[in-house]
Image 1 (cartoon, rainbow, N blue to C red):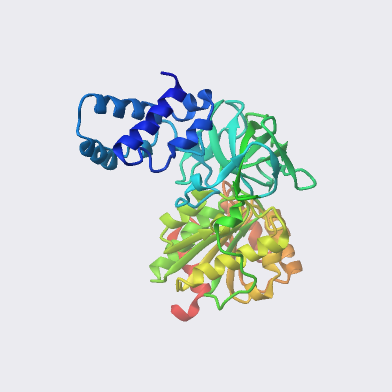
Image 2 (tube, rainbow, N blue to C red; image 1 turned 90 degrees about the vertical axis):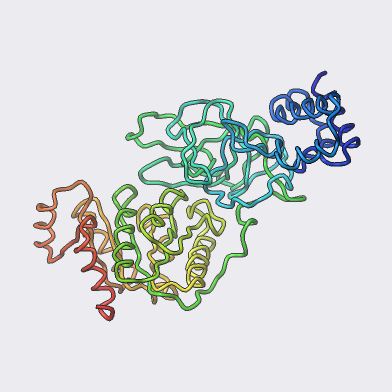
Length: 434
């Protein structure tokens, strides 16, 4: 039998058994699927139909077959090497920027053509096995290696990183979708756009390219990441004290500093909320804050943004929504990390907001060197920041030389890897709890 004949056999078996073979796959919908796609994406279903047919031919009681199907749910088990089959595609991974794990993706539709916008959810197919970023972090925080031909689900968007890949949507914000539409993977969390620049530090100087196999739709409109969450909020509710963690770039130890501060707060017996409110979404950073002891932890993908390289109003409201979301879980303090540097990713809209900064108990700031520290302090002054700013010793620098230069400027810094120094910083922020 060819694939289409097997589908017809499956329909007859369902009538005979009086039940669905596959609760998540309507066999009648497979009639319109090409033989090639059936063999690629529904091989397990075809094999199950032939297996059930053999059971019937061998005289097994129909009630026993129904019980077998109900108990084993052969159709729902993940195929080795794949995340799951969704909308007829064998997905190897769902990017971690799509943080929701409870979505029934098969209730949506997928279209091969259309117009895509920032935040729209798409299914892509890898066109290569190499690139500056050839892994995608899945929704569990694990990096999954992608190879040519692999399918994965992710979102369209922008990334204006100063240390890693830089890329974005077309200037008009509209991406024409067709089977020939080619895009680039801009980050591990899973953002697709047009790659513009790769830093010289990357060993591979070409982007990981993919084609848009389909764009998800909910009725007559594209499915956007924001659609999976409640509307963004515009006003802050009363907040717990916030400790901001900022810096001059990525990869300078901000997440390490956040983790150390969280542990110091936990040693004080405080219930800690943790968030990353700006930058490019990646689950790994949030999991690091959880591992440090955060009681509540969310970041901007948890409210519908893959990155905050977007409209300023939308990014600001995402930050407000995150703070409100955490405060509704009754924390004593919030540690809020900001990715990248303090002049991009709409971070200035947060640091200049009186509604937010009135709750700032202090800022932990990390820079790569002394001049970076001096320039950052000037920038905070221009933003009008009044909160106490505590400096960390620059990563991978000579601490003695750093402290000597800081002393000349009448400044000091602490080592985020030494518990007693972290405890002293928390005492400065919360003298009332000493």
